[in-house]
Structure formats: structure tokens, C-alpha cells
Length: 307
Length: 300
Figure (cartoon, each protein chain N blue to C red):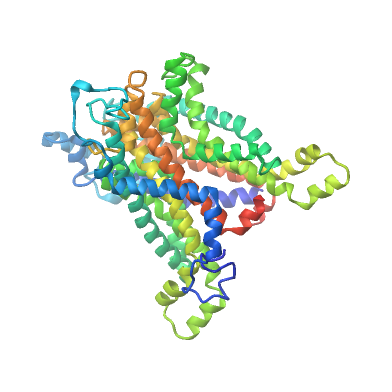
């Protein structure tokens, strides 16, 4: 296992470097003179020069890159144009809200997908299976930025059960955003569980178990389920990473004070250091989560390590 | 993976490139509920986009501020928006934006992806390593985040949205095609073509690609849905198509401000996005079901 972790860590180095380079290059992709664009039309030359200096754009590209990496190694992600304070401080205040939302969504997805996917697999081609498959297709196709407002209309405006936006009312605030974000994941998971459980139920070892007198329910829960869960766990862990990016939209719908909302606010105000830092933190978390999910996969299915 | 026109036989027995879509397969496709309903929805979407000026009851940009936020009525079937514009007409014209983005992204993405994937798989070596490492990096970066980042620096516009989405879209095709090419390049007919003196570009385009194109079609269908959804998401975040061009995502964003006062502004554009995406997802799912007997058998 240690060898496997080491190998995966080694594989992560070029990817992480690639992402750092990509984030570093972002500011240089701004058409024309980035400093001029950031300062906006009609800005005084000294302001443009100040921005150029603040971003280090007056230095050679390679020096800029080295400085970028050095500062990053010291945990310095730069200073916000808007507030003048450290961007990492703002990110760390917002980070817990995004993670909370991601967990909320995952909880909703598990709660819906497990029973639905399993029933669907056990009673294949029955009406309940058709309903579950339809739900899965609808769930995948329904954009969160539509489902969210629909939930707001139904449960925050027509029935004032939950707040329309914000994060001030604890668990009540979390319900609608979690449902919004959890639906698509629930749809993906339902399909995954259905296929996975159905495949295992077709295996000879399940038939053997039933032939030897084990009840169908026991055969499913004691034998098939364990193997069926291997791909499901991986998908679940991998999807946690996607939830972080899904949060960008959901946070916008519900004015949820997380990292995604910070990113969009920073883009609107052209606060590029904050934009860069937010993107970097989201992307690095995404890689880390995927790395952990790979390890998890290797733990539940030892064959993976051999590949 | 059987070729679209392989009629269930392996690529070795059918001369590559001369495949035709058999009647039996067409019948099987048409009997597939997901495929037919998806195809109908998709055809309807394309028809609405093409015939928008004929179908839209009003000018999508014509404003009547005295009647802003008016609820649906017999005159304005889906009501009026915050500037007194006809919502139905804007949705009809919005289909053009969605499809334009969707098709452009899929065409650009698949062309680049198929070309690079084929090169990586066929030539191997440094080509393969370089292309696949770039793919790894882009795949490690969450797609929509990269699109947001690119649009954030390039500036919000229709063309930049297409560029940003195509920049993340080609990776999937490249990986898919590379995997398929790795299998196909070992086939006897490829060796035979090489032995007869065919050059690499000819071997790739005439003998290899026709036999790996099946999954690409499925991916393109699902990719179209993904691109439409991503455009709507970017427009919803204010990073996509700029006003007054009607875009479903942007309409939803402005409608969100009037929830509880004029719900129709959020409900109808969202429904349009969902129907379009659902149609394409059904079509893609139907294609997988119909063209991949292994998958179908597994689920029966």
C-alpha cells in the first residue's frame, strides 16, 4: 500500500505543477495589456503602473513564475485589489461554508440514491425500475440553476419553511442548497448503483448462494452488495470533487457565503489575485479529494494496486 | 465495440470505411424509447432554432416597459419579462444561442480531440506521452472551473464561451479515441494496409478512424447536452452571452430577481434548458443502449 501511495503521489507532482502553471498563466491570457485591462478604461498611467508592479508584471516571465511559486510555498496567495487584505484570509473564512454545502449535498444524494438504485436493480424492468430510471435521467438533465429557484418558489416563498438565501439559520439554511446540489449526484449514483448491483446479482456466486438455501435478501445484502459498492464508493468520492465546483452555481443561487460565490464576486470586481487564489484552492482541493478517493478505491479493491 | 455499420460482426470481417447502417439496426434504434423520444426532442430543438423568426410571435428585443413582468396570457403565452419583452419569443431565439454554442463546442472539441487522440494512439512514444500528460492536467482541473477562469480573463462573450468550453471539451475525445486506436492499430487489416505501403495519414483516416467513430458519436451527443448546459451555467453566472442577446441561462438569472413576483421568468427558460438537455441525454443514452449489445444484455 505504501508503494502505491508513493506512486500516486509521484503522479500528482506533474499534474499539480501543470495546474499551478495554468493558474499562473491566467493573468497573462487577458487580451492586450493585463494591467491596463484591470485598471479599466480612462485609468491614470500611474495607476496602471501600480497594478503592473503589484502583480509583478514588469518582471521577466520566468522571474514572475519563480516568484509565484516561492510565494505560494510560503502560503502567500497575494493581496486583494478590492480590500487590500490577504486573499488567503478571505478564502479560509469562506472555505468551511463550501465544504459544509458539499457534505450536505452528498448526504442528500446518498439518502435518495441508495434505496432507489437498489430497488431498481432488484426489481429490474418493473414499474419502480422505470420510475427510478426516469428520475435518474431527469435528475442528470435538470440544471441546478433551475432546480434551485424552483425549490425557492415552493419552499421559501409559497411555504416559508426555509430561508430564501444566506447561511444564518443553521441547518434550515442548508436544506435547500443541499437538495439543489444533491439532486444531480443522486441521479448519477442511482444509475451507478442500479448497474452495479444488477451486475453482481447476475454473478454465479449469488446464484450459488441462493441455490444453497440463502434467502434472496441475504444473498443481496451479505454477498452482492459488498462487491457492488466498490465502483459506487469510487464514484461517490470522485463526485465530491465535482460538488466543490457545483457549489459555484449553488452558492450563487442561494447567496451562500462560500468559495464559489467569492470567486464570482471577484470576477465581477476584476479582483484578479482573489480570482487566481480561489481557482487555485478549488482546483487543489479537487486533486486532493481525487487522490484520497483513489486510495480509498485501492483499500476496498486490492486488485487496483496491482495495475 | 461493433461499428455502426458492422452489423454485429467484428471490424476484421468487414472492410473498414465501407460500412452502411443496416435496416435491422435502424429498426432496433427506432424501437428504443429513449432514442426516439430524445431524437424527437432534439429535432424539435433544431427546428425551433432554425425557424425562430417564423415561430416567434414577437420581436425578442421589442420592449413595452408599461407591461413589464406581466403574467402569461393568451396574447403573451409565457408572459413578459422585466423590460416588457415577450418571454416566448426570447426563448425561441435563445434556442439559436444554445445550439450555436453546443454545435461549435462539439465540432471544435471533437475535431481537435479525435486528431490528437488518433495521433497519440497510433504513433505512441513522445506524441502519446505529451498529449496524454496535457489531458491529465486538464482532466485534473474541474471542467467548469477552467471555463469560468478562461472567460473571466478573456471577457464574457459568445465566442469566448465557445473557446473556453472547446478548450476543455477536446480532452474527453482525445482519451476515448486514443484508447480505441490502441486496440484497432493491432488489427490485421491495419497491418495489411501498412504492408501494402499506405502512409500513416491514409491508414489513420481510411482504416483506423472509421472503426473508432462509434463511441465518438455517442460522446458528441452527450457533449452537446453538456455544452448547452455549460453555456447556460456561464450565462447564469453572468459570464456568458451578454444582453440583449437572448440566452436561456441569462434569462434565468434575471428571472431569479423576481421570484415570488413573476415566477414565470425563471420557470420557462429553465424548462427550455431542461427539455433540450434531456432530449440530447435521452438520445445519447438510446444510442448507447442500441449500439452496445453488451450493455443492453447486462441490463436485461
